[in-house]
Length: 114
Image 1 (cartoon, rainbow, N blue to C red):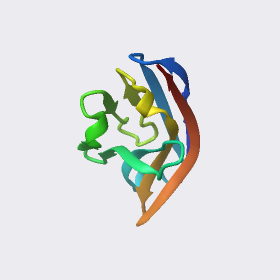
Image 2: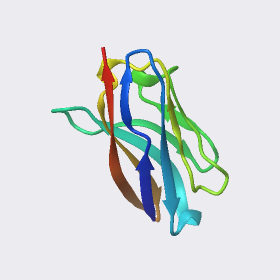
Image 3: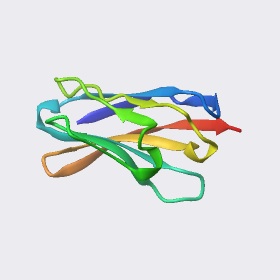
């Protein structure tokens, strides 16, 4: 599975941004689609995931502000981010679980200014 993330950028606090994750290859084998982030100087953390059946799970810090969705073909998993805070500044990575493995896309930088 290959992943292409895009949509990062600079936004003011309180603003919104949508990240895109395009999957290709063996998309039929994807069991979940995920977004992780790595803030400066910190470890990578799971932000949101959506399963094949559409169930979602979010980190407490983004609940009510971020929304992950996917298309039926498991080819796209956008992350809508609202009410952004400076603490959301990070490199965001999309990832998928498939065939018992975790596949990573490249990161996209999100910077939230105060």
